Length: 492
Image 1 (cartoon, rainbow, N blue to C red):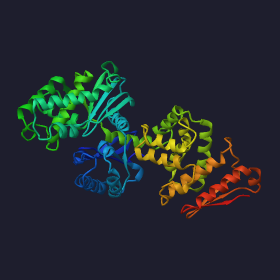
Image 2: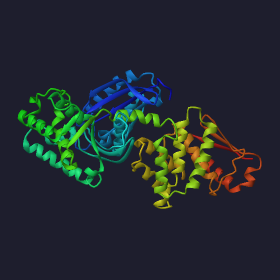
Image 3: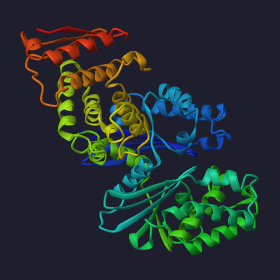
Image 4: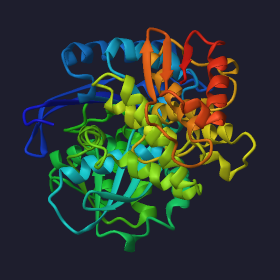
């Protein structure tokens, strides 16, 4: 990453969409531009958790405006992250497919724990370096994230399905602010928080920080009212609650610092924040400058190199947890990477890294059962929380793991995706070549691609030396005949 490089993060939140553009300088990212639009997409979820067309259109319109600003950015310099609303939405693929096309960059739906990790990255990067133990709280539109961490490392994370939009819709749908409504909202939030008490105890952290959304809005209101800037206390929250109760309705709230887009959801946000203070024993919280979008920017930096990419260590952790045969996984990964490198273009380093991860995880399902282990492995990857990975990335790895063995004709794969098809071909060939669970003889083995045809060549005499390997490769070539692609063998 060169000094002066522009990076961008798009945060598709439940209440607002945000665009953060920064310039990389000497290991840090300086803000260049920040755009925010209130989309309130979380309010567009119906009882069956489908996004309404109006809610999707609001999102698409916003993304179109962001896309104009992002014109010319390199693909690897933009990260678009979607959170709770799109995690919940059953029809999210409809929104994402068109959203990808409009924005021009892929939208990653991240899990709750991954969102929490990115939030902590954003908060910690904008705080002074310190050994203090931190509690970070982020109350969004439909989820609340809690993180314990030190320096740049998140040590415990959780994500709860409650937030300013969700709680306002549920407990203040008519806009009325009553003591009974606030009591019901806070009680419900405390019930959600109960499960976190074992981990997020007062003696587990030194300083509490609040990030973005509701906490930023409350901090601004309190500062405008004369409270210490950047500080939120229990007494201040009591004062704010009294103000809302006195107003009686969201439309009648008159507070300096309360922005119009925040007015409809201030009741739900405040009730969740008060519950967090009460149940976690917080007396004072500092408003942090960093947030999810800054975390996504710094995550782009870490992904530049395999040695700093968190996903690499996450894969190693998954291999250990599921007792993968590490020497064999490394062997398959090395052979698959060698074949991929013979064919792939120069700008395929990231695709090669994903192939390496899939190869290392191809037997992850064996811990469940050897029979059908490839299906078990795909299920694990589709349903696990893996630090550093977005859900589409895990699904991509799961597809490779699912398809690395078995009949190709039985799989519903996107054969028009040439890069995925190349990854799959290299993985399946590597598994075949490593069938004896020892290093295969790769001397003279070459893979080429000619359009929709893969050609695998060997040196003269190789097939006679390794008849079982040659047999498995011939079976593999037959299997590819049932696809739009072809595998041609020229075995000497």
